[in-house]
Image (cartoon, rainbow, N blue to C red; front, side):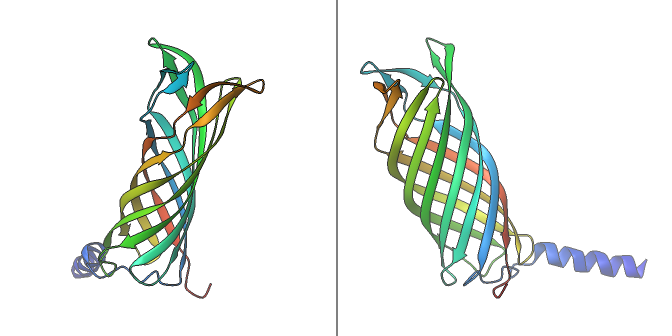
Length: 199
């Protein structure tokens, strides 16, 4: 019984300890995540915004690299495979969107197990709609999130970002039939795996 009590106290101290986050300075992390995307602008067809988007599923991953204790560089790729487009309440098509982003994080309280962060960066967005393609759109994002260090290498993460950018053409048989605005809100939840500094 005494042994079980000691093991329980040790396990509890590992779970609740505040100073568990090892510095990510010079460390590479791999991220995998799932979540949702909320398009904030409808498609422009014939000069009018008539293509309504539903909230869609998004998944992806990326790399993060520590630049000192308080900053990190992040490369992120997310893909929304099937976001419904409706006109007058009826589904008329599906849209696929891939967002490649490069950003900088400012990490707050990096010595704690729970590490909040804010960030910003550049986004490069490509999409397709049923029987049509969307030209590349370029823009940026502002983000906020939390990393929770389960161990010094395994981290649960939540990320929320607002994306805005230039409108791009929707092409059908080499003819422009509308415009796509990438403004959206993306929320994801996932896991990071930080590699040892000298891996």
